[in-house]
Image 1 (cartoon, helix red, strand yellow):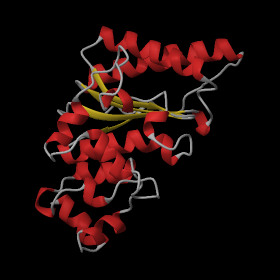
Image 2 (cartoon, rainbow, N blue to C red):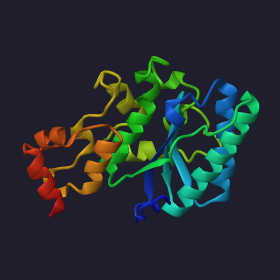
Image 3 (cartoon, rainbow, N blue to C red):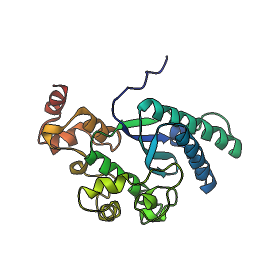
Length: 234
């Protein structure tokens, strides 16, 4: 059966995730990660797409990209295809390295974008790979915080611009997050708007990226799960 076409959207900011097939590791060491970055550098340079945040974990990757979804899709196809071939050649393996198509969640507003910036920075801390995001070499935190030069693929500055509206820096907001949510997720209060501004994209992001259930979201808005679904359908 043919795959469904990817949902088209007018949104220009996208939280992208790609994972190893059956959750397998896709990076064995720093050389693998540097190779992935090299392919990302090339693909970004070839398309009208900007990368604002990234973090390379063990079995998955997070990226915050801006651009038309068609261009984002082309960037991800190029990076994933080139990296999988190179990884298999280096490690003497065959067959699929990556699982399903990359996952895309549109970023509907600035509050969601701020939560994603913190989430990506905190990923290696929550995975036990380091004690502070600045210690993880294969992520954009240091460049986004203005503490180091960005890699060629990275357009730094968005994170600080987002938090400037809250009169704090991205680095300060991340420091505050180090003491919050030990479950590895941002709070619903950080990713959902007031009830009058809630959209299905907000709910989709809370469900698919952070694993919140409709019941948890309904409780947050003091509504039943059934009421929440009727409300969104309307």
